[in-house]
Length: 510
Image 1 (cartoon, rainbow, N blue to C red):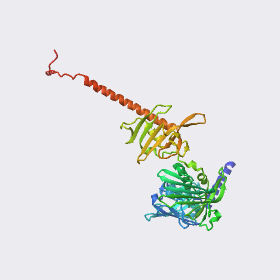
Image 2 (image 1 turned 135 degrees about the horizontal axis):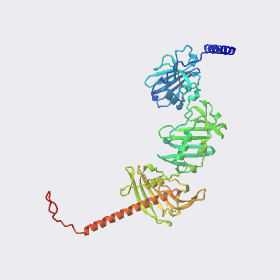
Image 3 (image 1 turned 60 degrees about the vertical axis):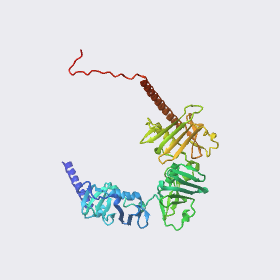
Image 4 (image 1 turned 135 degrees about the vertical axis):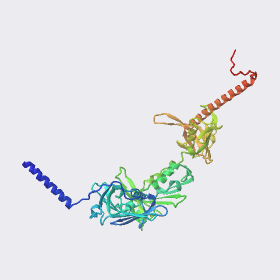
């Protein structure tokens, strides 16, 4: 009995303590649960201005006439990711729960004097605003108090954390860190002054074609050029070092160790200066160097990775065009294959194939079964060299171009015509297992460079000739059968007509 009395007294004391704690420190309680209560609704493209009133000052993001955004005041380019985050998180925001209406102590929810107020402005003049509060005790939701819109009226709600947690970030987080972005498809020319007095110039010569102009001239690989362009557009500021610097020399930018200029068809060029090393980060597994950088038309000095110079300093030979036919398989409309006999193979012949109305036809308009025409077009149009042999074939017999194994003429939908010339057999390629793979010398008829290519292009040319010869043989057999049938019909006596009396209805045979 005494033990029971002691337990009862302890329970009463615990209840009193809990009551005192609640009375002295009333934590925010979610008194009413009303899930998915709509707070705001708008179309994301209609947002044109965001004003964030914070205890440390005001931050304004504004859209310009060209669709870009800036941080007003310092006129920093605004982070596209941050602008998109505002649009995405708020445009259809719903409450997770309704907490309390007209709280007497809004500071308990982070909605007092130090609350962050956000105002959103739209093209049609509409405006919405709200107070962004603290995280709730679970730290997975934030308190919000709409000041306009269908939920305005003083009620406090909780919303997902990602809708509000970024408004208190440092001002630099609202700046765009990618400072040299561009459209690689619009680039026309690259000029790079590099360490060691090296100079690299590349010029676009067609929609998909580039030329190395310095240090020597030759067709350039479009993929390699796009990689160089991509290294610039991917530059991301590690730090915003200084705005409006008075002394560029302290960053090595008065006489930069490298300068990269990218010129475009429809916009001002990018002129990037790369100065002294800023720091080396050894925390990511291997050291990464960062340098001071500045754009000619920008007022900010950045620090950013300078390992892009490694690509620009590669041997220019690695920029050479290896897909040397400079055609795209999806644009090929006509293929003419001429295969010539060789010492090892007497197979020869000519084939015409045409791509019309989404199907391949032989030269006589008969549909081609199977995938051979597509394989020929792919192998020839996008043929990739194993290596470069010479800049000029010299005498035509030097590489077997006087008596080629095959020629494949391609016509594309623009009317461009190029012919792949496959010459004599070259030294084979030997794989790590010691197996040999046959190769040929090859070139394009409108350029002198000689390449080594795999045997595959000859294989598909042979397949096309064999298939056409089978088709031609079948056609010849069919024609011969028809001729014999017509001849036989012509030699038979004409059928004699005889009168057959009509039967009388109801009559029977005798």
